[in-house]
Length: 310
Image (cartoon, rainbow, N blue to C red; front, side, top):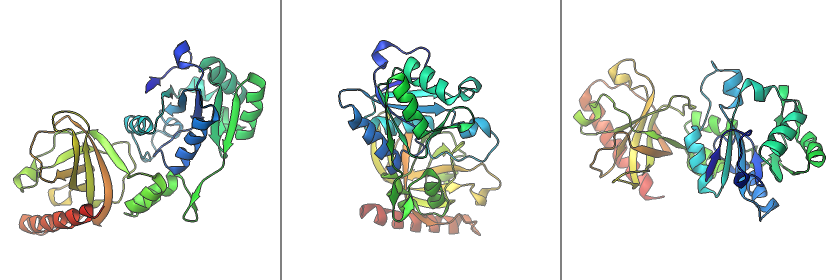
């Protein structure tokens, strides 16, 4: 997959795509339906995605609580998995935000990216002050020479599939419900960072990962699937993970600590993808380290049983 970050400098080889437009946070079922419409709109054209970085919500409200389900790298990884060939990850700047809907359609989509066809959701808004609608985009497409398909909103289990609904499910400690809407397990991706190595002392060495900038699922312990994405240990594993601030050990920054079952090796700096499968229990503060270890033993047994049944 090719990643293009500046619509003003696009090679001829990266023009002529059909593209779905949106933020695609989570790449959930609703997003996938829009992408599949783009895939079939012009079968002879490369499949593209037009998205923005930072997320416009982060741009306009930088101090708001973290809400993203995916980092940009995780989103790109998921999009590549489903066959996207061109990822137009455009820098969301004040200049871009100031374009009128007509200017965005003409200068960015047609003249800049050279798109032949675009697909958007029925609730799509674009241009300065989000003044443009999906219907406006159809009109501009006719004016500037590219096709436009409007995808209907998707519902599943009597609710609209959305990133907001997925965040709610994760906050409630229900990753399976989130997965129903996502079409895949919710994953936290990133490199293994150096921790305080307490897990090693307890007999549970963990791979620590930052969750900075991401929506925080319910704190606690999870059964997880672990993909080591690079290096000599590349592969898929089972494990148990603690997400939270580790109340046994004072005030700490929230992160994800994963114990990979039946694994020996060094993962520092290695990128992992950790899928949350089931929330086993909330975060607790124990009376002693012995009580904590006993609970960790029980968590591991429970997680192994859950993962074996997948």
